[in-house]
Length: 81
Image 1 (cartoon, helix red, strand yellow):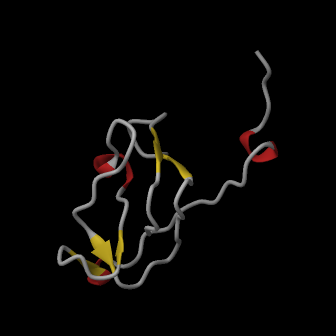
Image 2: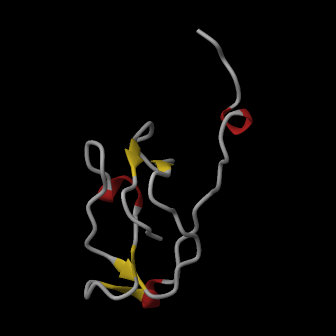
């Protein structure tokens, strides 16, 4: 097994939640990932959207949750916040 720092083999960007006043359930804006709550087995599910994203993830980005439970990874198929 080879050990290395994740940042040496991938671009690592920390997410940041928008203010809750910009959340909606009307599918307005971009789908919003709320940590492991929205993580599926491989792909996310969305019930929250934001019209003012603070960070944007692109299709084929790999998202890692740093909120409990840890070590969850998902693959994105669409642009989201």
